[in-house]
Amino acid sequence: MAAAAGVGKGTLFYAFGDRTGLVRALYEARLEPLANAVEAGPPPLGPATAPLQRIPALLDALLCFKLDNRRLAPALEEPGSASPYRTEQYTRWHGLLQAMLEQIPDLVDRDFIAHALLAATRADLVEHLAGQESVPRERMREQLANFTARVLGSRLVAE
Image (tube, rainbow, N blue to C red):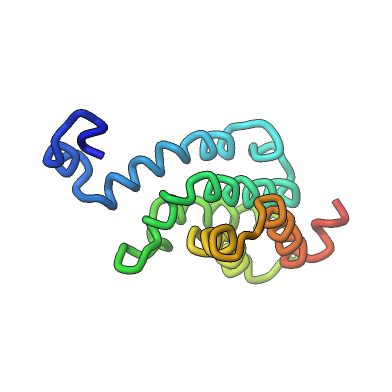
């Protein structure tokens, strides 16, 4: 990587600390457009969208992002690295999902539901399904949409 960037390894490690820091910086730079769309973009991801439409759109976007970044995303979740549940990105997505779930009346265990929905987009699961099981992208997206609908109950289908 250092040679491709035209710098020495020492320069890379000075700037990013270690391989994980470099991967995290690259990952976050690629994730920034999605984060911006969620924070201020138009429907279906933007804040003006109703939660029952926004939640599946967000999860689909995260799944597609991880599929598009299959070599990068698992590096942040591999054994021995810091817990993926403590990263800034995970905290952001969990908090956002939980806030959306808070807007759905009569829904219980919102914190757990947010964790469970995010687990369906974990990089290691995405890699397993896409790589080892050769599940096509569109099938994975359909499965995630169906799972989300079941978790949220008939409310999602009705709207």
